[in-house]
Length: 70
Image 1 (cartoon, one colour):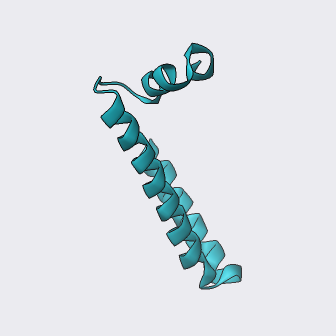
Image 2: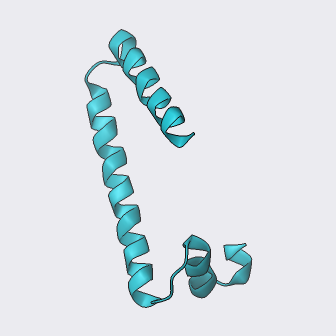
Image 3: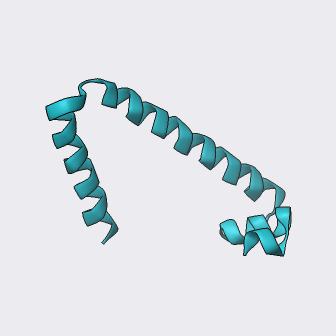
């Protein structure tokens, strides 16, 4: 399901870029890639501090409390 939605997003983005936007979309992909990389760094920092397996809920629960994690 995710691959179908993801490929649809990239195909629609490509069609729109071809018709209206131009080469600035490459910069947009670079910015979003850097943003994803910084997000990974944040989760890596959490994983180093909390050596217990878990997702973002477990990290938020330990760092910010039950209410924020919920």
